[in-house]
Picture 1 (cartoon, helix red, strand yellow):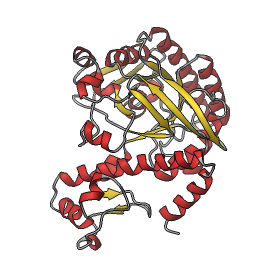
Picture 2 (tube, one colour):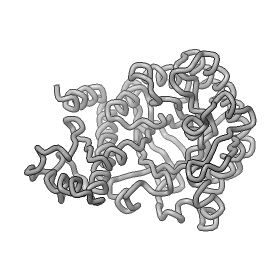
Picture 3 (spheres, one colour):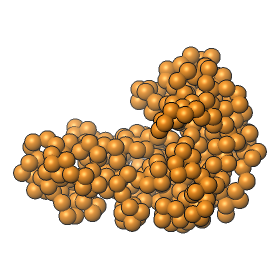
Picture 4 (spheres, helix red, strand yellow):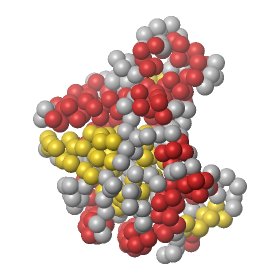
Length: 369
């Protein structure tokens, strides 16, 4: 079965809906934790479920290198391989084009992308067809078209050339896509340029994907530019398909995205911050290595996560100061649950026609005004 999306309620442009998948039905807007190598760092699938996680992400490029898509296929697909029975989305490897191709004018060609393995330095060549072939074998619920994540800033000429090439890559990938139980999302690019974002969105929609993502944001641009990138693309995306903003996980950015009509978000931020002792709270981020938490025997926040139920800031600070890995695990649980709970609250606000009020109240407290 392909995924299905049902739009149930609007509050302005903010949307409350349902995403129906082979592995369950889940409400949107949603935050999706990132499990690059078939695991969300430090956490088990059971811990993710306890945090009310729905879709999680895995990385096509990394799984291609190890253990290899054929190994995953022999295990029965990604769900069985990693023992996660919820929906899984695999990205295309496009971000690795952005991060690993050193000379973009030389290494990114019409046929595909040349770059070196981050593991052993061996030369690699990834094409739209190869990316789709890998994802078909991984058997995720949602596969992504192969694209170039355009850097920021770039010239108009570079962005135009890259955007048009991404459209041609999307056509090529769609032609070889052959997993009837998997859905394929198109990716809108265009850099910071409004006309390119519009063209990319319109032409990508014409190709007829199961969902649409807005790519090339959160790559170094300022916040207003990022929000404009969303605005320039989302206007042209269909109402009856899910909209996915790639690689965004800051709480305020999530609310800005929801206000503009985004349904799905992902980011490594909650677990990355957690490994460095940073915790999300409703009054902003805090660093638990700070000495002021040495005798603070209260939970991180007013939160229903496992960590806040059983552990204090003083204990968590002790774990980080003592370099104990449990600190990162416990804080990852909290940060992921924090963002997922944010989404739950946003959904309730949309249903009750008070999303803007919820957003303003959250930001006021988060910035501690």
